[in-house]
Image 1 (cartoon, rainbow, N blue to C red):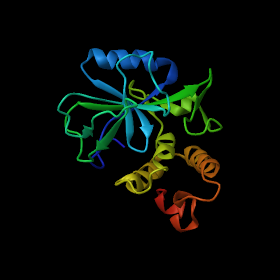
Image 2 (spheres, rainbow, N blue to C red; image 1 turned 45 degrees about the horizontal axis):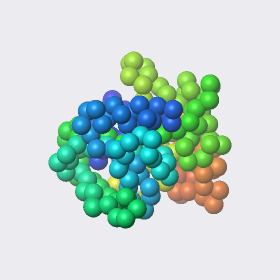
Image 3 (cartoon, rainbow, N blue to C red; image 1 turned 90 degrees about the vertical axis):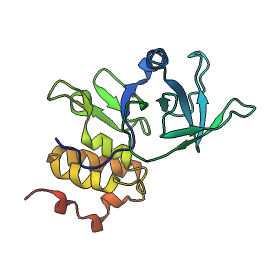
Image 4 (spheres, rainbow, N blue to C red; image 1 turned 180 degrees about the vertical axis):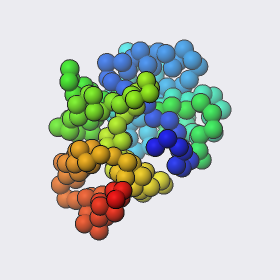
Length: 196
């Protein structure tokens, strides 16, 4: 959007599966603890890249003393409980990586590989810094409608997207939520977010 529209809890970086081990090793070399997310608030610390569980498509990396997280002692299965505090990130001591697949021509959405986007439309870099397109970011955010700021993100980004991006998002949401979704609902009235 070109400005900071709200406070963000953390930094998420979209990556590809084939870079996962290199990312883990690099983050460890920068003195970050690396944990793979297992779901339901459970995590597994990665100390050896050859011993991963690969249950979810993301890892979180944080430095000692990071106020955003608390990890409890591991249990007998070497897994821990993880608590995240949405207090806003003020320094670079926490990064989350989300892993996706890609083909030669398409980005594949991690939560449903039927949903694809041409690489040139999925990864944008108008100023030389690559970022994930807003329609894919919104698709990720669509899974957690209670998260503070996500509705605002939708309204601001939808307003700025072109018609092709909006149509792609509608189609992807329809695939992910065949029973409906707030952002597809008639009450949402997409047109009110589009600049006249």
